[in-house]
Length: 74
Image (cartoon, rainbow, N blue to C red):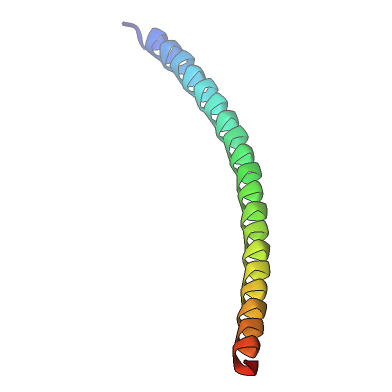
């Protein structure tokens, strides 16, 4: 093949590869944004679970203290 044909084919192939990489880059950006949203939701859920655990711990401490006081008073 003449050198000009090879260069032209090479440029066409390079343009195709660049376009493919551009599309993949855009897809990765969209996926990373989605992952960020999901992680924020997970963080909120863990915070909620922590608050529920704190309430349970205070409730169980109160129950234990109350039961102890009742037993001691008998």
